[in-house]
Length: 505
Image (cartoon, rainbow, N blue to C red; front, side, top):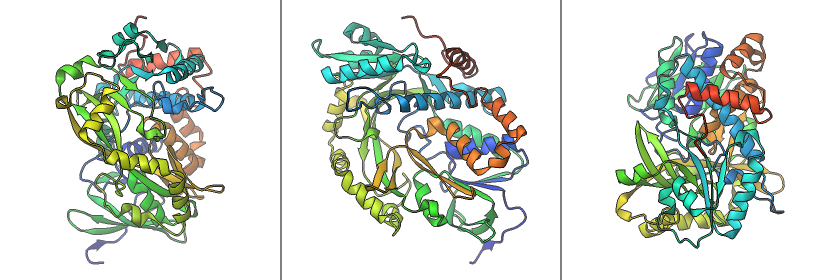
């Protein structure tokens, strides 16, 4: 194999593939639980968090179900199903508790570098959508996690909340909006970089950039062997480990297929690229202070929910609108056009074809999105910002999202829009597939993964104590207790320097 370094006693206990928010969160947790654990991280790019976790690539930041209408679908009988919203809101509070722990223990510096208060709002128009939003508000506000959410159909009131959205709008248009002040914006790229910066200084942690995992296979004793190549020096290397986490965004599926575990069979991936309109006019950016989410157009997929989105990126306020979906066969922004064809195997061809046939409207939608002209994009923006002008916006390419295609007994294959963790039966390898809500619920996802893959240690008194240090409410439901919900939010908001109290009504 030419210049290959042989495996040695220095082999790590754990290998994390992909330097994004998921690997960063898992790495920190494992080091906190067991300080002597040896971890190696491999990232094929020459930067940390350069793909889906990066602020410009991330489709939504601070997903906590306060304003995202796709988490509260309307059922056939007209009622609104809020179960997913409650689950995501609970998980986001767990993430905030963990980030507060990181700040308190000086694992990260100032929270302002990665999290800030931005009100979360939903906005709809038309009789049917207004009726839906009203029902959604009524259903959600009966729950502790959504107490304090305001609702209005009054043009004047909504104009105060979101002046850009209401400026130049016809007074006769029936509109409705909800507003929740405790919303946040999270820069997962910045948070990932801080976590890896901390991890890299710890004993027993090695982070290798420009390092691509070319192959993984398990020996008869259950140990995993990895073949790596440094993309800059072209040096190859082999190593051995007891546990692998594949958190490589769109790159996870091909690696999961290489692992050959039975659990990986039948999974496919459907790549969707995204684009933003990014505001270049500082005066306009200044006037908007909210994440305003609308309703996806009829027949369009849930990941296409339009939003006019205030973000803090590298200390500066930014304003984005989108996402506009696109299609490419790459699984990563820096991937290869052969990613999709190469991922098709005997084991997943049937689910992929079935999902393809079931999702012809989605395919048509994506083709239409790809064919959009700048005028089409501006018209979509004008629905949320009637006075928008072309010269104030530029097109920005977002990250790749690979939606999961899963084997299904009845349909052959279904397209999933969530996040899926695939783990081997012996718990020695785990891979994260899918997209939304992803990063915002990364802490809960990693706890579930640790419980599954490090079960004995997870249930030990020492680890359980550490979990309670990190997440004081672990195993309790904030939604079931108004007191616990308020107390926890006050504590985390204080540590994360977020706004706690609802603004004056």
